[in-house]
Length: 290
Image (cartoon, rainbow, N blue to C red; front, side, top):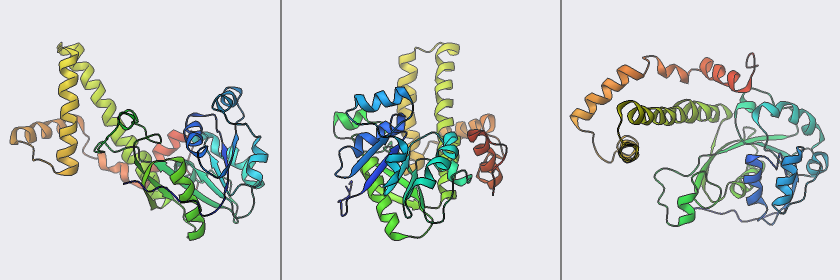
C-alpha cells in the first residue's frame, strides 16, 4: 500500500539538472505537486527537453537562492563542481538532496555546517510486486505507476529536516510504499555493492548465458528465453521468499555452478576497502578521501 504525502507546508524546490534522465523523471512528478518548483538546466538539449515537457527553465543561481530543498539531479562525477558552485549560494537550513550515495560517501560534496545533506535512491518496483494495471506492468523502473520503496540517508539527526526531505522524496519518486532511513555508508553498500556489483552483474551474466545457449548450443531463442525467464522467477521466489525447496538434483547443479563461476573470496566486496575500490572506479578518483 502506498502512502502519498500530505502537504503540510508550502515548499520551494529546485531541480538542478532538470533536463537529464533522472532530472526529467523527478520533475515529471514534482510538476504535479502544489509546491513551487524551479527547473535548472545548463545544456541546450536538456533545456529543450524541459521546455518540451511544458516547464520553464530557470538559471541555477535563481533556482537555488530561496529553495527549501535543492535536488542535484546530475551525474555523480559532476557533483563535486556543481555542489562547489551552488551550495555556497543556498540559504542556511536548505536541504541539499542527491540521488546516489557515491559522492556523499566519498566526501565530494561541498560542505557547509548550516546546510542539511540528504541522499535518496529508489529501489524500483519489486520483482514480486502484484501489478494490477497495464500501466503498472509497463513501469519497470518506477516513478510512474508501479509502487516502489526508497532508501534514504540524512545523518544530522534533524527530524524536522528529515520530514521535509521525506515529503519531497515521496513526491519525486511517487508512488512510494515506504522510505527506509539508513546511514550514507549503508546506502553505499546497497548501491553499488548489493544491487550493481552483485544483482546487475548477475542479470548481465544471465543475458550472456542466454546468448551462449542460443548461439553456441543452437537452442531456439524462444524456447531458451521462456525457460530462463520462468526459472529466474522460481529461483528468486525459492531463495528470497522460501516458496519451495529446490530438488536434490538442482542443489547439486547449483553447487557445480558456484564452483565454476563464483570466486571463493567473493564476499570480500563487503569490506570497506573494496567499497572504496569500486567507488574510485565509478567516480574516476585516485582514492576516497576521509
